[in-house]
Length: 219
Image (cartoon, rainbow, N blue to C red; front, side, top):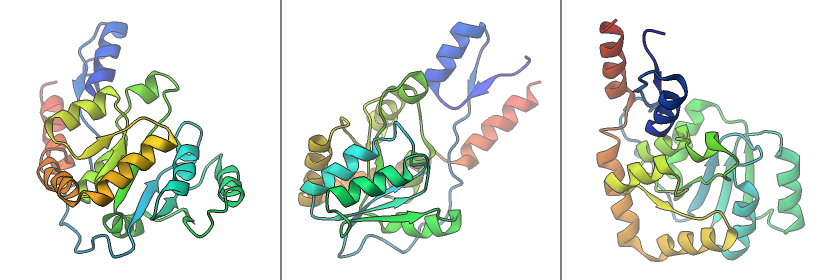
């Protein structure tokens, strides 16, 4: 292999130890686009976008809605689609939790900026989860939507530079506590948005593309 690269520093370090090769960092960030005029409205909601699969922390998110005054919109489908819908029914949360099904990327770009908060909590089911750096983390950032994210290495690293998220443990009480904190503390919420405005200028594909071209040019 003449050139190796991966999407996070943590994975790069693991791969370097395993394969004794230098791994460069090319992050899978969105293209920097004009900000949407849409923002969250009088009826704020939490947004989850992505696969409805094991390890995505969706059960705890749904349970937390029993303690929250806002709604939840879930965009995506997956192995847990029916199970999660049944959980919502069992908890009598059908008025608060809306399953949107598969949402086209263009529609998701319109929806995301309208959210009050983005959800990005995972179970620690192994290295691929613990060292993850999800696309949705950057999608929320680019839309100036604060997120709940794990205190895992990559999210903690970015958040130490640009605090765009609230790092949170994966349990319903902690989720509810942190969401309520942001609902009640407008200055803290606006600070996260302000930080995202700066961070999106750093974490974008225009920047990563230049780095990738440089790497190929070095071959």
